[in-house]
Length: 394
Ligand code: ADP
Image (cartoon, rainbow, N blue to C red; front, side, top):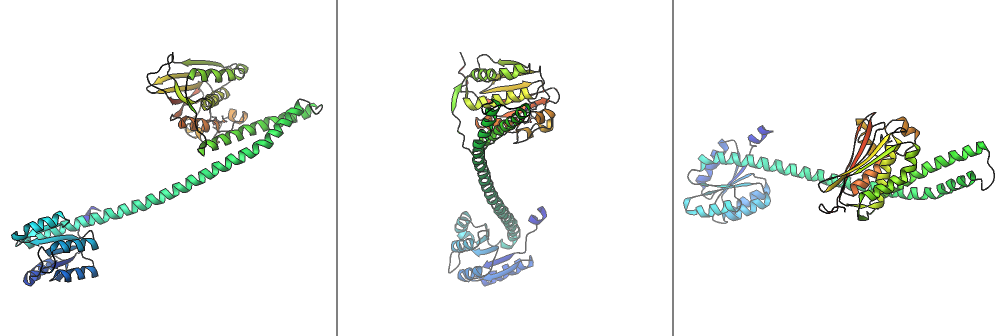
């Protein structure tokens, strides 16, 4: 690549001078250097030539009898912005030459040193032109890639919205008949329409378990698709974390005591209020705590901790359960992913809980991640913005 830039291309040079003798000398000198040279005696002739064929270097006297060097400069630049116009001048017209450079000419050469300086000047001009052309090509191709990326992004966003809309509608339509199925199974189990024998009772139990599982799945799909379609708006309030934790843990008491699992809650004293949507935050705690219980054996230990980290509150929900392998740390937050373990299979999760939790935490501006040692336990850690760094709970 470097080499290419250092090697000037063969050049098409247009030389304009009303002094025919000098024109010939210049032209011969440039041809000796290996350039292709065309000559013009008047400015008009030069402009006509320039319109017909491309030149990359123009050598022009500052004062021509018919047009000024400045007009030559304007016309050539208009036809080819990259052209290098080198003005040839004597001391008497030096000011005009300097002005021409200020207006975009590449350089000027003082007579009579013309041939001496010309070689270097032309080579430099050619290198710069090469770089300019290459840059323009790069910018062009970047712009093309950018706009095709933008188009792809737009299409992807549209497809994703359409998918979320479809899922939201479909889930909604599925819920109504499913609730009817669950309702009638419950009625029959309660013997409202009449007695059922043991075999029928078991069948009804199966219908109910599967129906409830399916309803849970549909509700989560509906929730997630609403979040993804941007249809969920957070109702942010200033909340005491302790109250949310309290309400979730009391709702979980029966499940935890049935499994003889101990829950330890350790919230830093004086933790400032967090800014969050209360119902959504409860959903986060509920999902994480249910998972902690679900993936921990009977008699296990669960813990909720919260502390202040600058303007953030950091919360962790931990267990000493089955743990998670490193390779599953990322995918467990993706929809429908369940790490390959017997508990996940046995307890029939949906694989959507953590995806929803992550979406909710991120909608609040926070982050969530997992730390775990396989076989020893897991901690799900997330952050929430504090209302005001200075405001503390009394
Ligand atoms: P679900 O619990 O319905 O399967 P989630 O999205 O809540 O779906 O969790 C995805 C997967 O992450 C689970 O199937 C499980 O493999 C793993 N996981 C989640 N929480 C824990 C935990 N506390 N301990 C071990 N594994 C967990």
